Image (cartoon, rainbow, N blue to C red; front, side, top):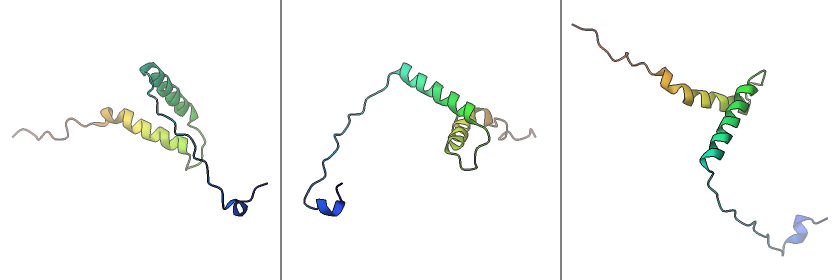
Length: 79
């Protein structure tokens, strides 16, 4: 077994860098649908700090934002 202190003279090999690839629309749509389905099915008796429940709350906030707009709050009564 190799010990770090016995390898002082060796250099660490760099991992090859991966080239980012773009996903096609169909693949993105499939991933988004699968993730949303997972998050919706996941909700349950989780601990308070569950990261998947936190993701679901963030997604809900974004997707439901258009329905929280109060269009009539700035209208002043007629004189």
